[in-house]
Length: 75
Image (cartoon, rainbow, N blue to C red; front, top):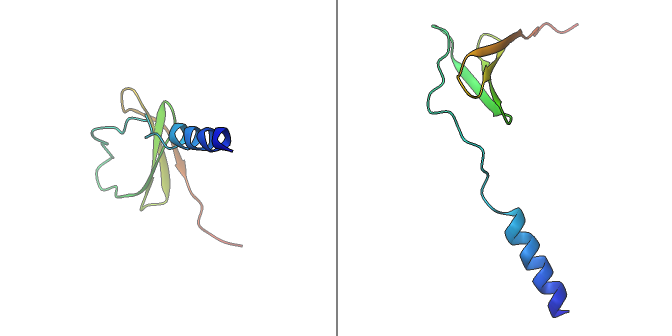
């Protein structure tokens, strides 16, 4: 029972360590664009904007990799 408790505590300590993902210092959006949400992968980050677009940025140099327009019309 003691060994099981030690294993559980060890697993909790390993799993609850802080994330090593680095947030960008600055995100430069096109003029007139307002950020609504943010998401991040290993080498990219994405910003959802108030004008219904998703902008995917390169995580290293901050340039826009892709811009996706969101169709909000429902059928």
